[in-house]
Length: 105
Image (cartoon, rainbow, N blue to C red; front, top):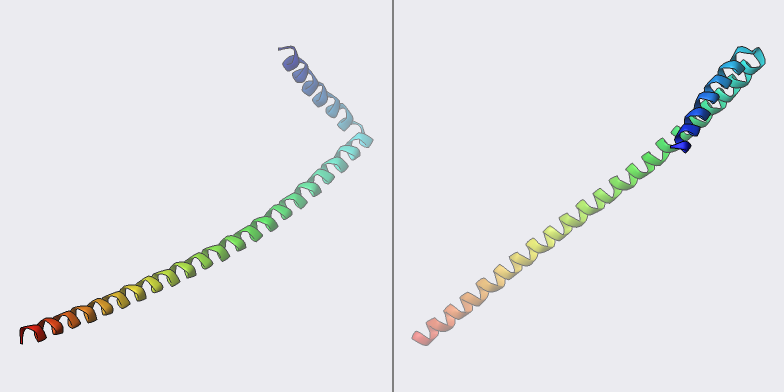
């Protein structure tokens, strides 16, 4: 509880001190310069964030495209395998039918 009270007292003291410094023209210039530097810093941070976000978005798009291509290739390979199996099964059935027909003759 004591720490919270000290924290609140420090925040309030900071506001009072900033208000008093802002009344003086030199203090006003100093606070304006600090504000400008903070603004420049936040602008740079925002630009860096947007740049990283665009990089990550590009990587995600590339991964999605690669996954779609891999899925399409796997689907095509599975379809080809099913078709080949059907063809072999049909050939085996025809051969068995021919052999059975020859036995009955």
